[in-house]
Image (cartoon, rainbow, N blue to C red; front, top):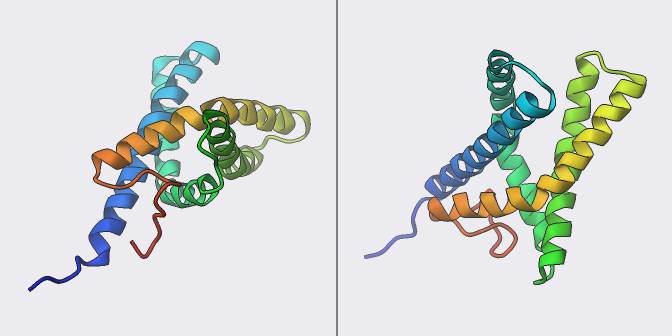
Amino acid sequence: MSSAPPAQPSRTRAFVADTTALVLFFTVTGALNKRFVSGMSWDEVLHARLLGAALMIPVARPYGLWRDWLMRRAGPSNLSRIAWDSLALVSFQVPIYAAIIAISGASGRGLLLGVLGATAIMLVSGRPYGAFLNWVRRLFGLPPGGEKPMSLQD
């Protein structure tokens, strides 16, 4: 007698995998940026990354679903996957970043430069993060995004 596995473990695994990937990848890259580009002290980096990690938790899985949806449009070539991964990250994360810095007091030129800087970083980070996300999903026994659809019903 065989029954289908319940939907909840796969959904939970997908949430944990996507959250783990986002927090690990952007905590490390963000810490390196803040320390060596922005010149923040390690104590400031720690506080900024702890806040960043808390903000990443609610957006990790929605971003994963968004990326999966967009990556289904990518062709088999590396250039296509790079372009779609970059588009996914920019189109999802930059508006969130813009809202955060606007709420924090950025306006005018500062807001524009912040958004342009974040866009550049996300364009460069799109494919490396997408490959990392797929690797983490494989560790959790999940399919990579965009190749075999993952959804809330999985």
